[in-house]
Length: 109
Image 1 (cartoon, rainbow, N blue to C red):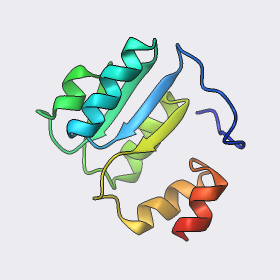
Image 2: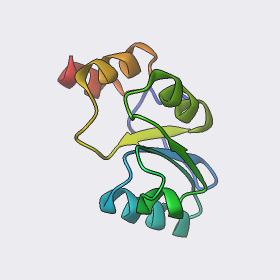
Image 3: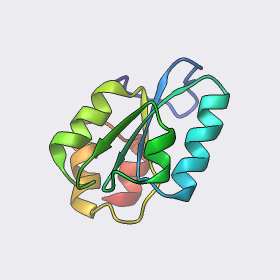
């Protein structure tokens, strides 16, 4: 995964967007991203989630599972969270691995 250090850094079409969460908002993000030429990977807890069905890759697991978070992060150029189910400890874990912009780390920790 490419670590984005500056929020003004561009993620160009052809890059992979990782999405944590699989609901309707995630689905809308998947559809929009694919229309713009991005690849999309989704991590969700349900094999039947609408976002996972539309994505290029779908990981099915507890969204707080460190193994699957790392798998998603490794194939993604940027990761976004579209769920309220992520534990604060998971945010900390992602921050320790440098998978969140510094501004998010300050807000969450």
